[in-house]
Length: 288
Ligand SMILES: [Zn+2]
Image 1 (cartoon, rainbow, N blue to C red):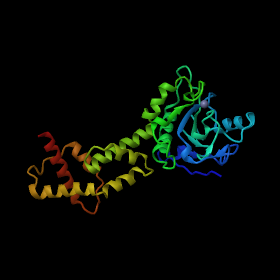
Image 2 (image 1 turned 180 degrees about the vertical axis):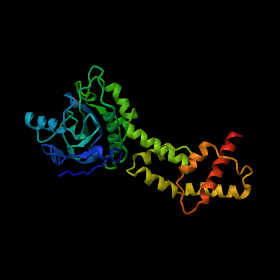
Image 3 (image 1 turned 135 degrees about the horizontal axis):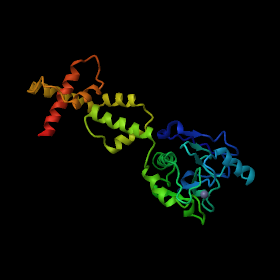
Image 4 (image 1 turned 90 degrees about the horizontal axis):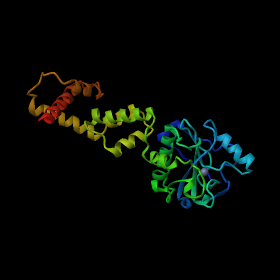
């Protein structure tokens, strides 16, 4: 029996392991294959109403078509909820002649005549694909965006809709991520500014955004980092060396805001002033 447990931390509770609940056999049908055989992540549309549920789709496959289980591995509904419905190790039934080497992702809806998946679906497809390509080592041969395909790349079919060429790049680039995601990204970018005193680097920002840590936990981690300690140490030595020629001058509003957000330990009241001095130095340096 295939039983490959999978999580997508970036999707948090929008990723649902639904293999037990869905109608039909999720674990052995049609057959179990080595994961190294998988080469493609194939996108489909359900070609039905926007309200279709994973159970509606599975019922159609099992009861009307007489299959052993649902044809896909994943189903993404309009609100971006991503259901894991067929074990990764099983070959299912979604792309004729390529089922042995493919994973099937069905986006609920019919993407014809200019209609496209919702932003939430695009975002979830992006995160699911990223997890499978880049953070699932067992998928040795399905490991990059060149492996993202549409059903029509393999067969003469309208699936996944004639809008596929215009929404495929959106899945790759993850355009218009939902507000909660943008807010999280923004909050973490600000932590970089106030705790580490710099712009975020792309790899670090992505790492934190996709982790399942809360903003407070990330702030705590950054505050404990050697980078943060170095910043504070630099501020201390600056204060010692200079005794602040401009001591007493009011800090800029930006400086106050940055210090306020530093969340330094309350047990060391001197730290806020030292950090403030450092920020002031930075501002002067940047101006000159
Ligand atoms: Zn299809």
